[in-house]
Length: 313
Image 1 (spheres, rainbow, N blue to C red):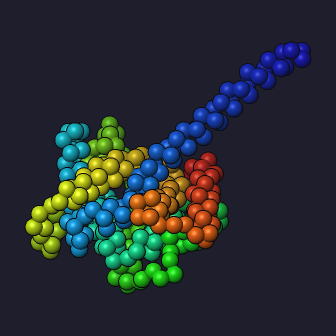
Image 2: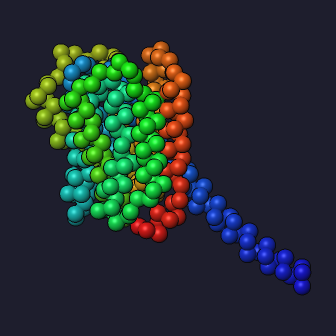
Image 3: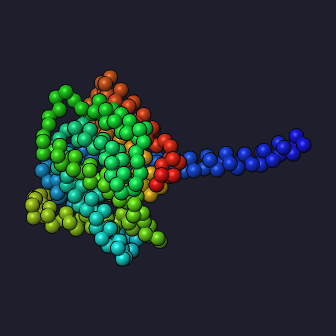
């Protein structure tokens, strides 16, 4: 009897333990891949200031979105059907058509630290939108982690002599709000059956780019010439920082709770700070190290308790 009991116990508990580890490992892998997106976006500030032509945020937004979208459409050869024509248009406007020019405007008018601190409120905004759209009530853990994240980013990237431009602050706050709404709507609408993530990304990029292109050409026009650095900056932002990064980001939205994805966005200011450290010769203070620790803690806490989030969705 003891031998039989041990056999039954081993047969029932071992698969259960493996099954528990399987979803956990899959979720961590999904979070790691999704984090590549905002980590890549953390280089937008240094790319914009160091490589792109000055004072052309609309042009930068259009050249980041439309070429990448058209390339993905050509590769996937898939167009929206049914109500996904307007859904792709709405998401394209929120993620790119409106978000990109506001983001570049903020990058041109604010130090990267101020812009990053404002964008760090996205987990709190996602939690708020989630109440109305996803019918998910944020936990105290989520709200506390969101506040810790904002504090950590502020310590990490703000400087005592940081200049404040009201228009830039408003632009970044609106941009962050639009992106938070896009995360929640993407979670609500999901992905059409049989449509790849690259195709869905291409639809949104193209929709946003078609809105941006005529406005950019009318309001700003093209520079007299593009330098090699300009072309390299646009290519990097379009291919790496947009087509690939957003495909991974949308994959994360699809596989993870909206609140968990929003906390991954905090990797953006971390990379922005490290990019300044490596590429611009900046240094880290003790306060910034403390901020880095708080941001990492916020991201890790924000990934917890997925099972309970699923039960309430």
